[in-house]
Image 1 (cartoon, rainbow, N blue to C red):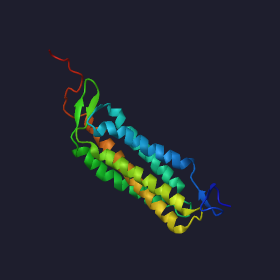
Image 2: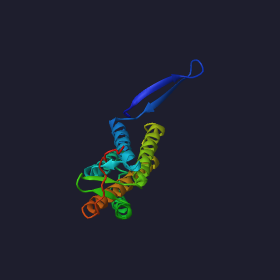
Image 3: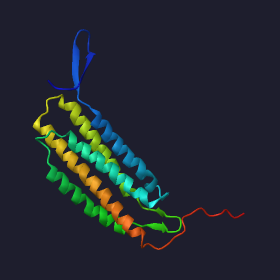
Image 4: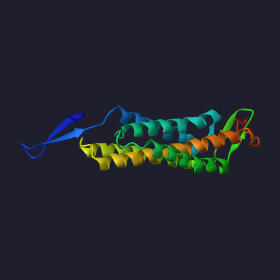
Amino acid sequence: MPCGRQIAARVGGDRAVVMMVNLNILHLLIALGAAGCAGVLVHEAQGRVLRPSRLAAAPLLAAVAALFLLALVAPDDRAPKLWAVALALGALPGAVRGFVLTLQVDHRAALIRLPQGRDGLWTAAALAGLAVVTVILTLTDGGAGTHETGAYEALAAAAAATAAGYLGGRALALFLRTAHAPHRDLGQRPVRS
């Protein structure tokens, strides 16, 4: 018996349409992880001053969302090797981007700024889009658990792993660069009258 919640709606008089809703707590956690990842990266994309430790928050939330996406996939359709390869393939361009991204560092105040850091927000938006696609696949599946839907969910989990790897490689490269970047005063300056 498929687990889920049945929703019945009256359509045109006596006819009732029953739809199975197979959403669970993992869908909520995926949405929260993707939204949290985007929320962290909004400040970065706007060129605001951040603490270097904040670089780790977005990849961590993205990895959690990607892991939960992998957990949604039926055990027969899971491909952990594909997921791991996708994570590694995402980390490589993320690290390259992290090494070439403009970085301003204030060593005295332990602050950083990424004037051109919009790529992280675009990646978080792609992760959120993958979460939406997975929810749509779950809703349209109707509890049947078809192999085709499972394959699409596995690909969505691999794509989410690529996004998490990209953000992780980018954050690691940026964090490594903060130690040797030239100092630039990013603190509050007194207003002159």
